[in-house]
Length: 256
Image (cartoon, rainbow, N blue to C red; front, side, top):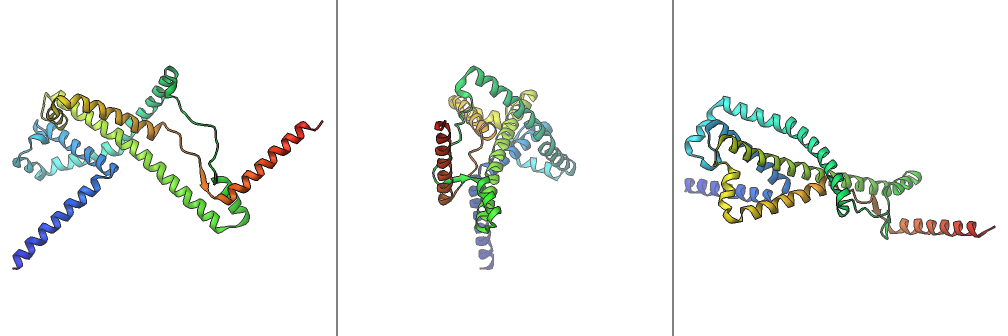
């Protein structure tokens, strides 16, 4: 009975871990990181054994008992993630900005479509709300401003991270393909996946590249939304002040 209970607990634990992985896989950031790790391991396998993870065999487990191989693998991955990829992404972003400017000159519809500032009803500029909170010593208004700024910063950071991880994953995919070409090895994960897709491979690849392009453009080359906070009563007061100023200005222009 004890052994059966232990076995059931082990199965339950394994099932819980599997469900946990599936839930985390829905997170785009986690999924992109996992893709980079798997492809990096695939590249390391090709460089060490001449075959990728697609041709994994039980005997390959002995590689992870080689302390030297594991140490080099971890060091290379850490160096790539900490130094190489960030530098490459900065260069890519710079080149991308130049390319976007050139394309917008040729195709005007690609240019920024930012509209003149015109806040929606019920919203006030964040800086105006902050200034009034400090001027009146209103803790509620200042807390509202601080929460807004924290949410705005978190959203911006998430968007930046999405762009970086998407570009990094694309680079690792290209690197995996390039290493396989260099080694004349058709068993890399990228090559093998392409072959499995068969006649749909080209169409799916094109669709993925278009998606990558849209994600990177949204993450890196799209203006941030207006910095406004929902506060209807303050918005009403501001609009009344603006209306009075417009009326006063019109009277001054009419007056001789």
